[in-house]
Image 1 (cartoon, helix red, strand yellow):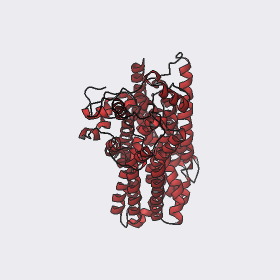
Image 2 (image 1 turned 135 degrees about the vertical axis):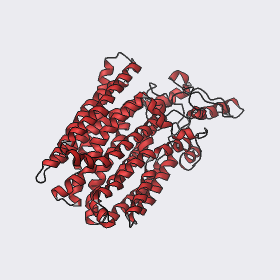
Image 3 (image 1 turned 90 degrees about the vertical axis):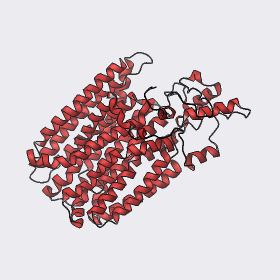
Image 4 (image 1 turned 180 degrees about the horizontal axis):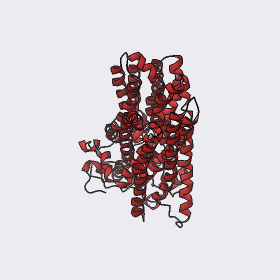
Length: 526
């Protein structure tokens, strides 16, 4: 444990369930968390064996049925699906109006580039706001934060639908972005709180691909809606989706923040008193159901301090977080934001396509992102398993081995951006090559996303939730800057030659940091 960390951290549970020193909270001295099956009673071992089919579990859960690691698999999967869809809606909200930029601009009296700020300003807020949401989620739990997020997002989407001026739209879009943001940042913590290490790459991949898919699917679906109806209908639909999400999460989204130290301390105190000890492997009771679904109160007894709100930013001192986050953020800027945000501005007028047809140009981005996720999750897991066989019995391949899968992703992103920008300038009539380029870039972007996020979480399991917040902050901040300088770059060097600038940026600020992350990781795990 870091001796320099503030005391408030000492009671915070590690998302992966690993042991920490715990301060006396005035009830009982916390029992040590189990690190192996030998630390459990026979009843607890029998329960875990019946539930999981093995005692080779990492991290080792407690012997309690209400421990999220011990939930039934379908309960875990339903919960992460809800959280992942919540994450999807963060960027879905941002991308839904992109095909309607020209209509919005005409209705509120601004230019199309000005209308695009309704999306780009959300990018920055989506990065900053989790600094507030993470401490609240660590103290009061994930569930109340997610529910408040969904309710307020729906309310402010209604405000967007009723807006009559550009200023009103900007204000309500900022508020929507602020409230919809939590799942995109602390989703990594939810994965680490419910799934074992061997399962995490697949579910982290599912969570991260939703960030990428939101923009193109939002544009694909609502391009025709905005063409047939109006851009106001888009916001009414978004509010309706938020309402449905709220109902689903209320009934099927249990709390995943489980204070193992506090729970075991309470069990220890009860055991040493005259009262009978609670059965450690008892089924979830009605009181537990009420606590998980109906009670909204403080879970973590540690007081919140001002440092909690900037603690994720301090992860910049960890090279196994900063370097992969920077590398991934630059790929996200070029392989996702550039090729999606610029489709309306580069292709709509040049090709003379309408709002509905513009939405169809995002199909390759969706297909490419799904392909990239398969490469980043399935193939990289097979790669790690292959390398593990050469490490000897019981020795998994270290996290830096996974980074070899980054380089194909970076090269695909470069190739896709070159095709997209070159054909966007030199095409004389409508052709499919610009969006083929955006699809190739999307494959590379998602491959890099899954690999880098998994590497950062594997190297920093003690702060998995904060890793997601930090990566989100850096990604969204860099992504916010891009839309403001893209037009100047196109005007200065031309659209096609901008691909040279983009390639140089990827080499310097993505490939070199990835090499650095691999070097640092190899030293750490050697």
